[in-house]
Image (tube, rainbow, N blue to C red):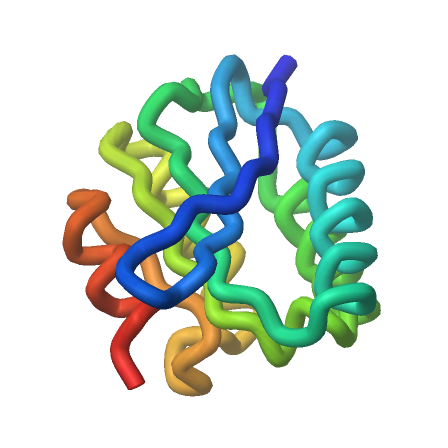
Length: 128
């Protein structure tokens, strides 16, 4: 089961919402995270989110789980205006992210991108 922690960090003059995921990837907890992030976006407006999955391990998520997460994403309208960078080093975890982004058609919209290095993710988040 995955766990997550949400905090705010200051990068220069930009506030970044940091989400740290650890443990095994599981749909239920990621759905809970999406709902919580949606609430933050509704309260604060568009966010700059760094999702750090370096401590996450592959779980038993399959195509149907990812499809359900994409459906949840489609209803999270506050998050759609946010900019989200994902850092994942484990190849299977990166693959799950790629499947999600492809199904959600996010690659070309510039709202979400994945990185293997945290510094690259932060640079992408704070650029104009």
